[in-house]
Image (cartoon, rainbow, N blue to C red; front, side, top):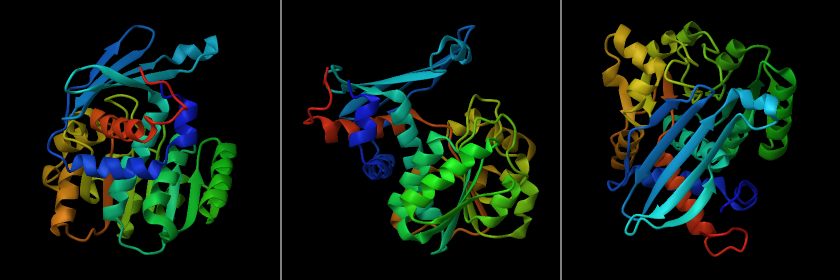
Length: 318
């Protein structure tokens, strides 16, 4: 078992960023359709993916009522097996692995879709996912990040994140008075909330400034962390895989209600192939990345973690 403590102590998120980028450029990986089941008291999700070397199955349980029982509302585990034999080789804490791989995937997108050399990064949502994004972004953008803004409905959490950013990124960091101000002031916006409704107003993007908006908030197929106006004003829209076209309410609703949306959408794999071949046009105006998560990300991250830790004494291999 590769525990949460081992992951937090031993794993370099920068290596997961590299694994995600290289993984999406390969042709041997495949994700199966996500299974979502309402159990009455909660939601159960099962995800699976495989490539030539390894296969994974991921279980996620989301049970809001667990709060009253003193238990976490979400729990997850990833089982990694050899593709050649089907024999399991490791079980990985799925909650923290998901946090890491989500931030790492966003960092890969940011690597190719930001023009400015001096960047202000704004975080809407101040939890563990925001901190993982900060670490992953630091691994690819480094000294280009010179300022950070935070916003959360809980002001104390926003200030706590700002303090972490000042310490870990050595940048000026402060709490924004509202999310619209944060968006207007930022070159890169990272929304990592559990909101079911838009967290800022897309009409403020009329200023024409080049900025990348990363939205990874996803509770279910009906939650909308960003509004339709944000999608409409985005010159390029990147999704992790084509599954997001139906699983993301924001993208699904835009495809139903607007013209000329589909031709602006790139999957992450398409973005990377264009970048590697020199065919990626310089980004202009608002650029959007909407991530709903895919088992491919779990596969590439689990492979990376297993390979780096399999000779370590700080875990148990099945």
